[in-house]
Structures are given as structure tokens and as C-alpha cells.
Length: 631
Image (cartoon, rainbow, N blue to C red; front, side):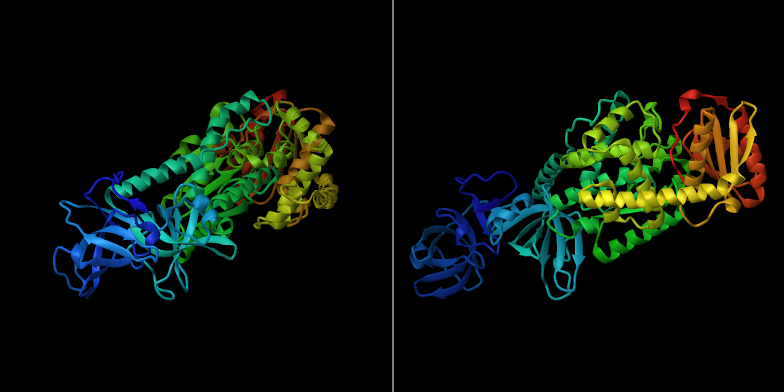
């Protein structure tokens, strides 16, 4: 017998009277225990009573204290369970009875339901989703160890238990079944809990959630003091994301669609999908609860947030889902992101950011729930987002470690990081069979695939390029094909563009190269303006060995790259916006890498002012070759 009461039940307490739930059977009763009963028949030798739909027996006339009619209620004590299954009771009188509800079967937790298939159990938890189908109502219930769908049927398409709402504490009684390979509870009874019973269940669920959500305690892949400053922040994010999964809160991941952005997003995606599958008995949960969405711009555009909000509100309406959590990777740290964040704030959608672009913390901090960025710890963009997110993914799912050991090196090379730990990351990748040329090819293949995928995540394709959970032979062939195509297209672009490259020597003796990409580069093909500018810049740095700045511009934009010149592009953008009213200057990026936008009619004024500021900048050899590829 499984009892549920306000506090512990003392079996010797004669004031305790058990109230059997309808689904209880003779397996849930004990001799000597007292039960609430209802008379279902009167005969010469006594009365027959029901204690539940499946528990009935006789109170012999000699055991009765009064006269009863059908429907009368009384308290009885179980005297005997005979070999043929018949039950005999005696009537008892109880002063100040203490009623204790008895649920059928044994108390179960979500993580042990696989061992209870075919059994009747009861589960205490909280409702995290309610979906009305054309047949049953599906209540997703979590108990802290996981989440299970509970199917309750009133009639086709009719809401069962309409009094039960999202986030209610409930007790579900039902049979454990498998439906299309996934576990499900077929509901016999579902009760909303109140008072002390509710408090007890919520405390138990929260304790289990805290234990399940705790991130794995993994050692970092390399020993890097600068990175240690970020580990506590990453652990907080890992726990925050694992809690979101246990809340059945959908996660929409937005990431910059470049090499570092994909090195950041794919490991976290696989880790979260694994954790969702581990904790949710619904086989479709990973597909419903997670979505990876690449962003072309290095900030959260209003077009993207409008689309995300529309999908979120539709899912809330049609599928009973919670509004999502937004996870921003390799973007999301700047003032340019704040208009989109304010739109999300209207719906209390939480925002988590892991990024290495130069941040605007005063603008962003009030609008995000978690923000991990090396600049917030006096470090810089040489710690790439891919490096951070590999460690984040391992905290979420440490079993992925062997598949991810080469990815920080890919991220570092893709973003041209000259971090102190790059040699260690390259050595780690070498242990897995990747030399530096292999890693460079993976980065090129990622850029090329991302360009043609545009707004599509290309989940399987990108995982194969990165060799995460895929076929190693297919990975090698795919990377070779994509990287060769990328190299061919870059060579063609530069062959046509370089003859039109213009040059001048700045006042600080830095070399300035600039080109009108709208006029002298192929449009709407690979490589995009940012990549084209970066490739030109890298060649000029290698040719000259001196401080170099490269500007690739179009009608209303400019892409900036710098080596050996101490620029502060976010600050320069802010100054240009103040100094040139009506130019509509915006943009940003890293200190020496970025992009700006402006109104077409002010292009000449903006570029002239920009070049003047670059000529005033100090030279700094420590910044050489620390570029990243941001479109």
C-alpha cells in the first residue's frame, strides 16, 4: 500500500483512515488497516461495501453497529483476506479520523519507469506542458529526474482534467505503457495537490531538479589560466540550460554563421539534444525542444527576433509549450542586440549569451539572464566562442569529450586566434589525427557550407563537416570537396578583385588597402564581402610584414580588418555616429575587426572620417594576425 499524506504515516495510529483511490486493488490493502467505505448492497446477513472500484467485501451483521442503506458511508477495518480473494470487514468508530489517500501501485520516478512497463504506478510532479490532441490530453509531468507524457482521455478532442493548469503540482495514477517505442503513463486518475501535500511535492521535485541539473565536473581540455576566469560563468550557464530542459522549456539557439559560430553551436546542440533525450520519455522531445538558427549578422536582427517570436507564440498556442529560452552564441553582446532583446522582454523570454565580441555591458546586462564574455574578465577575443562552448558542451554532456577534442583548434584557426593556448589545442587535435592543414580545411568547409545554407542550420551536414557523431570517411571526403570548392571560389574572386585594390600610406605609416566590392567583386556568391576583405587583408599582411588595414566597402557598408594597428572599432563607430549626423552609422565587432553600416549618400564622408581616425591610431605589433572572419 502506497499512502500519500500530510507528513509521515504511523501504521499504529488508530486515528488513520485510508481513502483508496479508484484504481486501488487488493494489493493496496492490509489487514488491520481502516478504510473509508460505501455500502453497495444490503442482505440479511450484513452489508457489502466498496472501498474502491476494485476493493469490495462483506461486513457481517455481527460486525455492524448500526443499520445502513445503499450509498451510506462508514469506516471499516479489514479483518481478513481469504484464499479465494474475498474480503471481510468490521465496522469501527474513529474519533477525529485522520484521512490518508492511498494511490494504487508503487510510487515511481520518471527515471525508473522503464522497469515498470505494464504496472500501475503513481507519480508526483509538476505539469510542464499541456497539449490537447484529437484524442487524449497529454500532460507532460516532471519529477526532477525526468519528464514523461501522461495521456488522459475524456473523449476525442475534449480536454481532460480542465481544472489542472501548467505548473500545478499533481499526483498521477496510471499504467506504464510504451507508445511507438516511448514510455507513457495511461492516466487513471490525476489530482491537483494543495496545501502541505503540494509543498512536500514541490520541495521533493526541486531537490531532484537541483541534483539532475548540476553540470558535470570536467577537467578543462587544456591548462589555460586566462580561460579559468570563465569556467564558473560557463558552469552557471550549463546548469541554467539543463534546468530549462527539465522545465520542458524550448531552447532557440542563435549563432553567428561563421566557422567559430558553428564550432560553438554544434557541440552545445548535440549535448543539449542528448540531455533532452535522456530526461524526456517523449521520443519527439529533442525535435520540439531545441532549434539551432544561424544568423548572418554578428548581432540579433529585428528580422530574426520577429520570426522567433512568431514561432514561439504559435507553439505556445498550438502545442501548449512554454515560451522559449534564447541562447546567443558568438553574438549578442552589443548595443545593436538590445532592440531585439527589448522585444523579447515584453514576453519575459530569458536570454543567455556566450560570446567573445567586444561587449556593451551597460546596455546588455539589464536585458540578459546570463552573459559569458572574456572581456568581462579583462581578457579578449582570442578566447573564441568555440573554445568556450566546447567546455560548455562537456559540462552538459561529458560523454562527448572524445568527439570534441579537435574543435577548439578549428575554432581558433577559423577566427585566426593567436591565443596562448593555440599550440596546446593544436597538439590536442594532432593526438586525434588532425594536422593544422586538416583543421584549416575544416574551417574553410564550414564557411563554404554556411554561405550556401544561408538561414538553414544544415544540422547533419555541419555535424559531418565537424566530424561530430558521424562517419569519419564521409567527413574526410566532404571536407575535401567543400574546402577545394571554397579555395577555387576565393582564388577566382581575388583574381578579379585585386587589380582594383587601392593603396595609401597613412600618417602613422600603416598600409591602407581599400576596394569597392560592389563594383569590383562578384556579388551573391562565395566568398561574401567579409570573407573577401579578410582574404585580401591576409595576403597583404603576408606580403608586407608591416601594419596593415584593409577596408572592403559597398554602397552602405564597410568591412574592416587590421593587423598591427591599435584600433577600437566599436568606439570609432560610436564617434562617427556622433560626428556625422544623418549618416546613420552603426556596427561594431572586435577591436581590430568589424563592420559598419551607413546611409548610401554619406558613404564618402563616413569613409574619409574613418580613414582619418585610422591614421591617428597607434601601431601595435602585439595585435598582428589576430583577425577573425566576421561578415
